[in-house]
Image 1: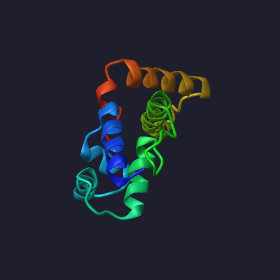
Image 2: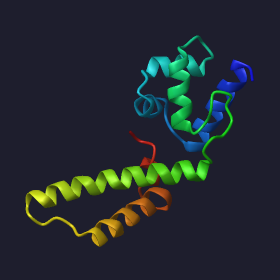
Image 3: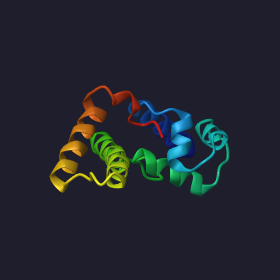
Length: 126
């Protein structure tokens, strides 16, 4: 696959996910200007291409490595665990930590909110 075709795949996946350049940069650990250069098909390091395609669930050839649905579920679970860890940390400080079953329930609730509910628009916010 030519680089131009890879860039088209990256742009298409970015649009499918509804992720901004700024959030793609944060999630991939690459600068915003560098991501913009990649999206304009300008020269960037191979490590930049790898970092961006990994976040988008693509390989170096632009082929789907992780389905769109699986990628969204994975991201929702990560964000849900992050939010629960904050709650758990604060609760533990107050000696009111959650039991394992309660944690699972809250994670599931947040996952659903990120995939289908009111938090859906924030799924790809870094």
